[in-house]
Length: 248
Image (cartoon, helix red, strand yellow):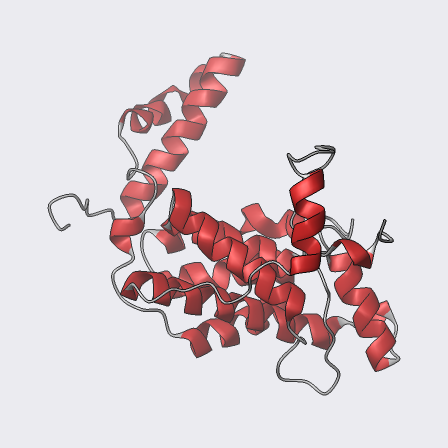
């Protein structure tokens, strides 16, 4: 493993990333002023995935703390979770600008789709693992989120039933009696919880002990087998169907 691993300094990473961006700008705009920076584009970044750089287990509770902290500082759920995991992973992961996940807050600029904490955490997992390992961890994280009463550390908890921000917030409002505009402390704690759960699964994958514990329910599987590539073959998804659709 050591033979495959490149030593990448912060300066190297930024020079290469900056060079690649400058090279693209030069090619599309013809601005010669950017030409000196384009030289860095000729140097390869580490091969994806960056699994070889994940060699030590993450401090799960530290990730939880950082996720909540960054949400509280205004980064939002997606960027907060992403930054928390990458910071605990260290270099070269921590060189990636967390702002690339800022769009994910509120389920994608407040569209209420995929929960930002899931989005950011899954993005961090994807940087580490590729292919089946990534898919297994993210799949389990979404299943856990859908079935677990969250956040873990505050009085009012709710089960989203699916990975959507819309459902997660709506169900929490029903349980807590609060308004969506009062969700700040709740989403802050949830961001930490989701990032920490992702970190725990990553540690298990590193140790070779990862075993999915949230299988698809028989009811959902019956819908899935028909509608996702089966007889009907008219949709895609793994979410609990009854949350939005009546049975037939």
